[in-house]
Amino acid sequence: MKDSHGRTIDYLRISLTDRCNLRCIYCMPEEGVCSLSHEDILTLEEIETIVEVAAEMGFKHIRLTGGEPLVRKGVVDCVRHIVETPGIERVAMTTNGILLPQMAKDLRAAGLSRVNVSLDTLDADQFRFITRRGELADALAGIDAALEAGLNPVKVNAVVVRSLDQDLLEFAKLSLDRPLHVRFIEYMPVGESSGVDGCGWGPEDVIDSDDVVRIVSERAQEAGLGPLLPLNEAAAEGWGPARYFHFEGALGTVGVISPMSRHFCKECNRLRLTADGKLRPCLFSDLEYDVRTPVRAGDRDGVKTAILEALGHKPEDHFDIVGTERKMSQIGG
Image (cartoon, rainbow, N blue to C red; front, side, top):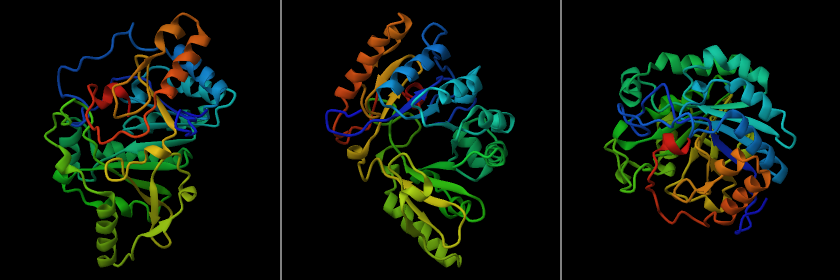
């Protein structure tokens, strides 16, 4: 599938739910969360039908997100069905990791191939501050469970925020003796039309990914680890726009994703499906195309038409637009 700018679009990110077992300060409010009703949210069968149509059109890669996808009842069976869909090559998931100790083996048996664990700090007190109710030990246990279950690759996604003063070298060192792929993501002020999402952070909290690489490399050399060395993307089996590095002899990698300082729009290969059945051509835009109505009517041609409309309106660039009406938990991570 090609969009109107000639980009190959073969990657669909699907939000299974807007619900979560954490309340991360940049994603959703602590109290008064207005969750989707049972009638509004796509059923798993509807999601599976949309995937079938998308696969017929040329989509190959599926990532399941949330909210927290593992709180959705039936998620393991959903993974199995999507994996078995003709044309789908790999199915991945982004999760906070809290439920992986109970579910990683079943997910791997169902055919899940890879997992990204969102983890923004290695400090227990800071983790409680960011998540409002989580325990760092539970997230770390989730990473261990993913590795033990044979999921590959296992990636750790850390959003870098100036106000948090994170220990970036400690994150990078996770890649030394285990096949973990640590990825630093520039903070994106996504979530409200003002461009500030209510957590007290704004554009001034964005740290350029080049600075992240420099900071990690300098601190690593001071610690006797040597510098970060460039690595081609294929070595980390990436689907997206990360740039990868590694320490000499490390089992894993260190990557950076630069949505603010280096727009990678020209390489974008994805559409997003929200939990309430809206296709979003771009994370930074409020443009949405309804796919719930045709899938509920049993109209597969209508589903295809909605996908084609979303593809046709995929922007060439997000042109420094950073605010959206929906929060990340409503859009899908």
